Length: 286
Ligand code: C2E
Ligand code: MG
Ligand code: MG
Ligand code: MG
Image 1: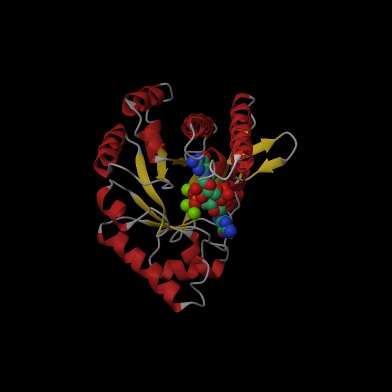
Image 2: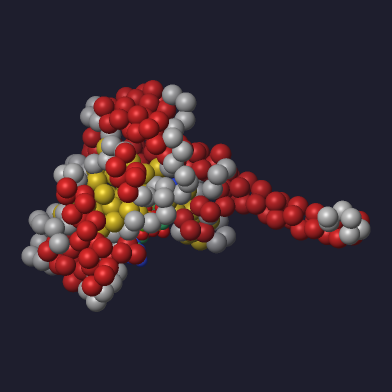
């Protein structure tokens, strides 16, 4: 139809599309450079046990130290690389970097589990399990049990049984899995049912208002009961206040993560943070 309206209409439309495509290409190319030029950083955010107030693990979160724009959060660049091969390249970088960091902490006397956000697309690649097995072998013995993969669902999962099968093979290497952002997007009840998961993470959007909103509180309560029905512990995200921690503890939630405990921080700050947190009394006597 555009063609019939005359040559001009068609070419303007064409130009706009080319421009958008070119912009997208540029963003993808920029991010490729970011990986190559070592501009990516992992920040680490603690998760604690609500019962004891002890540090349980850390989640690795990607940041881009951009030469002009400064430190960028994932929302500033992840959408641009979605569905491109760079999504896989990023997952690969994150996995390796987090393992290196775990090994370094281990050497420094901090024995801590690290979780990474990895797409199902990455673990579904040909011979991923062999690759992971080799990678784990290049690190100190037993590192696998300090690795947790948070399955992030920004795509349709595709063949759930195939993904479950790969996850089971990874589990036999010692790696565990959690379901991230439960209750949102594609992180559905059917995945909860079909995948070999060790932990359920309730999305922060359900947590914020549990103090004042009875419905939200009941939803969180229900999610916790659901997880407990299959002996799965629960992590609450977005725990911004001590009061939220108290309520979650009363609801039987095992673990908490959020600004009220600590913000994501560079690896080198974690040792000091962990040392100081041992003497924290607020979260110990909730
Ligand atoms: P997520 O996996 O659900 O991670 C939690 C996000 O909530 C993080 O945002 C964290 O900084 C933020 N957060 C934690 N506690 C609080 C709180 O108390 N209040 C508020 N308002 N926010 C809190 P971040 O680092 O911006 O990451 C956003 C999302 O980007 C992550 O959500 C995850 O889905 C994705 N992402 C982060 N790192 C990676 C990565 O290495 N690879 C991939 N594929 N995705 C990643
Ligand atoms: Mg996560
Ligand atoms: Mg999450
Ligand atoms: Mg989330």
